[in-house]
Length: 257
Image (cartoon, rainbow, N blue to C red; front, top):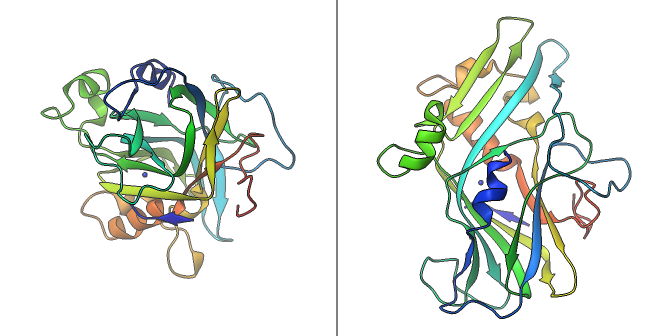
């Protein structure tokens, strides 16, 4: 179940600095791997890895054609919430969550790949977790100086998409969406000391640039201040799901996607 509260190889390095919310680190740890998918695989795809080459994805409404060649999301405050705890993840609240990365971090969404692609792995305290929380974040030079220095073209941009619409010139959509995302797992995820756990963030790109009657809209009309800005921002939030995905097939292991 998803409730609204939403890469590159650099995530793998950033994740090494992840810390637990508890005051003292655990004596034992469990590995959790995070994957991203835009398409479900027809059968289980094991052994997903970094470095998969993306290929453009094409969408149509029967009249218009949209080709998406690159998608980037900026996220921060990625946290797993402990099962049985009533409070949401809050910085400084001991024991409620495992803090995976404060960020901001860049999620370079893999395109044209059937199944989930691993983006990074972290060590967390063993236990049961019932939801994932993260924030789609617009970085600024004042609050996110290091990130902006590394990615100056993403200052003030939380979502960036490039591609073509109706065979026209290449467009760039740049959104400044700020949204806290909360994804409840249908069955709590158990992170154990003896094995790795896999989670997938599923991004349904097909729904991003669609309006009334499922008709495609020109992504340029969704840029800040344009007529479809709010429509596409809401579509992006509605398109994200997170779930346990041990076989990396881009489907919820517990049967809801």
